[in-house]
Length: 305
Image (cartoon, rainbow, N blue to C red; front, side, top):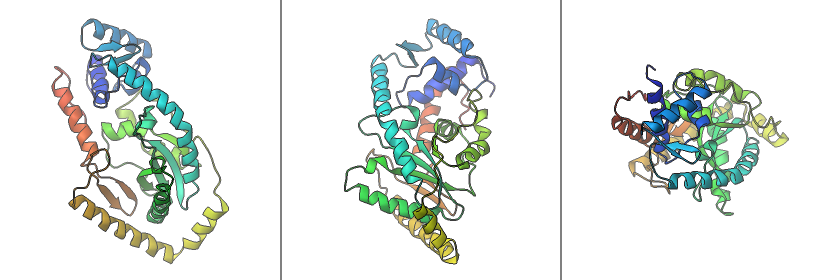
């Protein structure tokens, strides 16, 4: 991306400005679109403050001169710190479901933020050609969590299997989600996933090396036994049936224009090797919001695709 350093800073702050989330110097360095040194970023930020391009809110930087954002961020970070250990424990538990090969924490919690409405979102990798068996069993379990009021701990939103480790949509939204993903379990699967998606360095060349799973858990005897039971033609047929059944249900939901508790349209893209939120809704909404913000900033190239 051919852009000046200050343009890159504006892009970073504009993206997180969508979520009213000011950033530290270290975070801005991490999300910059060009290779640089942390010391150069600190000097650049001070110059941009002096020029009135950005604002400093305590230890954070923002395009908005709004001190309330600092308090909101600090409170959100404190709530995230209290919730993250629970997320790792739940992720390690979910890893014991049949055919699960990798678990990662995604969503706002992976970016160190939580509020009273925050869910624990999970990114899940399954064995090849067994995604729909795994997803169905996990979502049947989730229905039971409504009885204890802990359904928000088990938001399993994004599934891929080992045949689709490289993410199809390559843009600043998916790149941000990928480099902030917190690996939990995987026994090597998560490592391969990050290696195959190293295209994210095009957007964020200052990111560190490959992440490694927090836990390296062995599969339980129950998980192994269940997989043995369906590692045959019956398993193939059942996986295909569950894929078609779920697809029909979600087509109906989209036609009815259903929304979730946050008021966002519900949609699911399905295939043999993936089950993920329809990018037409939230992902496109974020990219459009970023495009709109950058249009308002003179001299910033809108390179968000």
